[in-house]
Structure formats: structure tokens, C-alpha cells
Amino acid sequence: MKNYRLLLIALLFSAGMMAQDRGSVVGNIYGSYTFSNNVNFDYGHLDIGDGLTYGGGFEFFPQKSTSVELKYLRLDTSMDIDVPNGIAGYPDKKGDGAFNYILIGGNHYFDSGNNAVPYLGGGLGMAITEGPYGGSDTNFAWELKGGVKIKTASIVSISLQANLISTWAAAGTDTYWGYWGPVAVQDYAVSYQFGLGAVFGFNFH
Image (cartoon, rainbow, N blue to C red; front, side, top):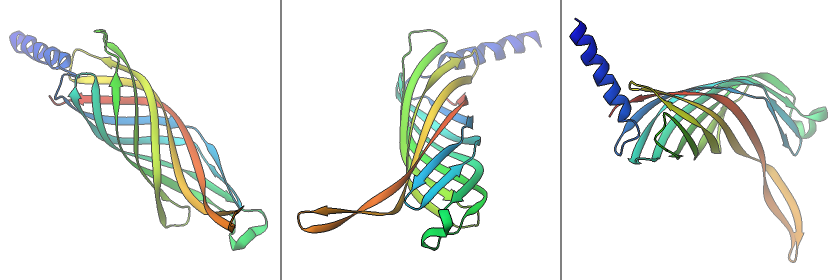
């Protein structure tokens, strides 16, 4: 029995040392605390509450220190839409909603041979927003992130990271006067959601 335990420990240790080798595939589980923020638009503003952002994804390493990542994240939160005096026929709304992010991007690891490896990354994709009273809207989203990946003597790694996700939603138009007269330009409501959390990685190769 003791020999089997030693063999298992040796296998886990060798698997851990393979993390971030070229061709590696890592399954990630994400969890972070996302802070509240305020979004302004032409006829009022939207207060987005704080909450837990969670999800999963896969990370592929075409090179030892560079990865390509595909992931899904979800934030369940409160939404308070404030439109002063019901301007333009839009009443105030308050309730629970959610953001669903589908992002593709990558990370660059600054590996110096230590178990703690700093990294920077980002991604592009879409945010599917669920409103307080049903319905959904799909918009462009991007992410920036940075942190430290901590390797262990097993197939599991833990990353501590900070991230910023921004969603851009069309919100009416602004009119400008040009040489040929009035020109309507698309206006956007932009959210910036900052989070602190962890990523648990499971090395499959």
C-alpha cells in the first residue's frame, strides 16, 4: 500500500511540473467578488450591484508562456434603473438581473522558474444581459486582467487575480452639426466591473 502511495505522489508531482508546457490544456474554474458600479446614459443611469462572478473555461498553451483561453462567466446582481420623471416614457425599474460573458483571449506568463508566476491577459467577446423584468440584450464586452499563478506539486494550480470587464451597449444617439448639417452618432452606455478573485486550474496534459 505504501508503494502505491509513493507512486501516486510521484505521478501527481510530475503532472504538476508539466503545467504550462507547450501543448498543455488546463480546465479553469473562476470565482471572484465583483464591485458595484454606475452606468450613465442619455436619459438617466443604471446602478449595478456587487456580487459573485463565477464560471468555467479552457486554456490551451501553444507556447510555454503564452495561452489561448475560452471561458464563460456569470454575474448575478441587482439592477436599479433610474430615469428622472419617466423621461421619454421609460419608467424606473429595480430588481435582479445577470450578466453572462462569453470571452476568448489569452494570457502571457512571466515564468522565471519559480512556483509563483505573474501573468497579464485579456479577452474579447460578448455580454448577454438579463434585465430585472425579463428579456435579454447582447452587447460587445472586453476584459483586462493580471495576477499570480501558484503551481503546486499536483495537477491543480491556483491563480489570484484582479480583472476588469467592460460592456458596451447602444443607448440612443447624439446629434452633432457638421458641414452638411446635423449628423446622428451612436451613443453607448458603458459599464466597468472590477473584480478580485481566484482561478482553480486542472492540468489535463
